Length: 221
Image (tube, rainbow, N blue to C red; front, side, top):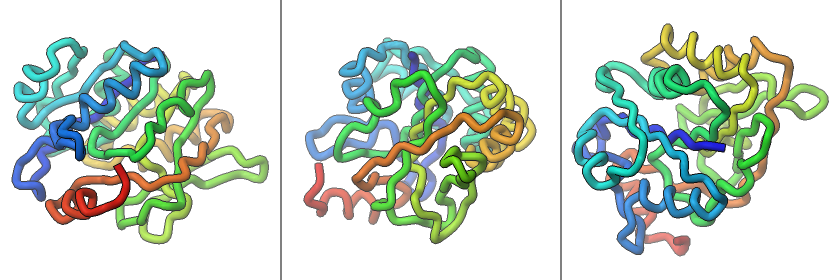
């Protein structure tokens, strides 16, 4: 299994700070923390999608594979996801590179099936992605918006080739959209294979300086 980490965004509401380089309470950048957590479950093949201040990230972590999103300022996670899978369409864990997790969630994801990590502890916002289940408990689509519980925490495993090809094709077309919207359409192309995995904690997502302050003031690591 390999991992794809999305980190091309400009972080405009953070004053232009690249989210991958935000440090946890121990002074470790998000990207370094993810690298450590992934290596603990035997994942060393890591591709990072970068864009804004890409050289800052690449120079600090030169051992990773990198894909550059050259139009990061007018695209979103759908396009970065499509770029990553277009380069290599083999199965992968896909991770949003803007979150800190109190306890590493990646051990639950290293399986040969399609998975979405979800939590009812995370506070939903207007862009929250949540699963739509069928009667057998499989995820057959996603929805976005406030009140979506459980909520995706931005960690997925993709093994189904039809879903991966759907992410590529629709991500290239809907390049200014969030990955959740593209995933909804990609799931329609495949027989239900995706399952939800519960993560009993909340993520810390950094969109504003207040988000980071809330993390620093929390009792969680």
